[in-house]
Image (cartoon, rainbow, N blue to C red):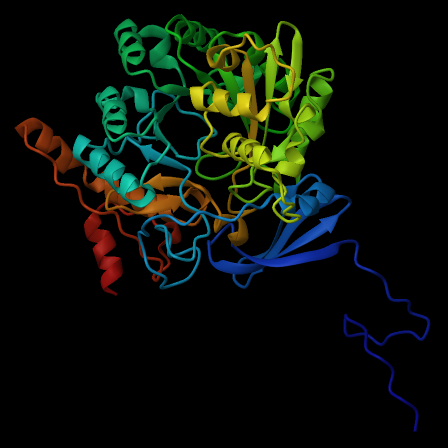
Length: 525
């Protein structure tokens, strides 16, 4: 009796001469992600193809999706040795109940403490950017009582938190932003940042005087120089001169600035080198945080297979700085997942630029897999490098300058240099790739060290807050509290903060309700 013919993968009879084919990718690992459309938690495969890293996933309701995750597969696989053991916070904000990513708060399953706490003090903005992960629009403006309670919770969980950032909306238009900075300092938080587009700084002399008094660090939106860049990304083609004016005014009062360019493929990727030149030459600028444009909140149409990634920007830096910086100068930040963040530091002496990684073997010091035994003096250097290669490192601060000096004990820097001299002549270049619903990776999320702080004490990892559905639920509740805040201000009485709560049991991932009552109605079912 003849054998039945084999059946191929498509259900058809296989020819005796058929030849099996290898896949055009390497299946590297399995993780968990979310559907970009319905936000359901689903499995995702990490694939290596043509020396690039992709995420492929399938939602049972919405179908298959694929996105570029990292532009250099060799670097992606090699960087695992820079994965530093996490630090456990002093207290958690939630318990393990529904599993990651729906227990954020932080929960005991989270693998890292909060290096950076972010407080969005308002939702309104004096711009209407086409690219805005916060989807800024009128809604809420936090009361002092809320901010103070959030700062107290941050101290409770961290003990001695290092960095808090006030964001928005546009935080500089909040009438109490200076008081918020003072409140953070009163709680012993040494580094306070304001995330701003610079508009108020450019024109408000009284506000500039107040900034000179409280001396925050400035996290400054700056996407390039071309009017077309600002038309596409910010909706204001003629905004450059206003931004340059704001930078000059910040230099006049001696505040440290970190430029924050959102780099979108085909829009401003040709301006990377020029942004670095500005940072090297301008007296106020101490660092740059290049961010590949991610597509959460409000964003332009995009192709997830062509998104910008950290290795892409590193190549642009190498090509556009004529050798000042090369790819090997950039080393992953170990406190988060290594593919999320890379950074380098350089000492500027006139036209000479010397990256720290060329005179100190940072790669060996931050290798947590090989775990070589080091002499005692090297442990001091290792600790200093860990401080520099951390999400809590602040460009231009005395602490980062001291860590640079310790790291460079044998570098040949002039002995006459003071810590202040180093701070003024050191530039940081960081690359931060935030995840969006197309690239969301639960593995990376569990080691996130940048958290949004919320009323009630919850701390939500950045990429979870912006992609999973936390922002939508928090925004609905914060907006609904605004009438009571206004009433408290009118009556001159303290506002009683209410905790922000979350519920993912009834498909609330994408809900945008109008009041707390609607949240309660969802929870009651």
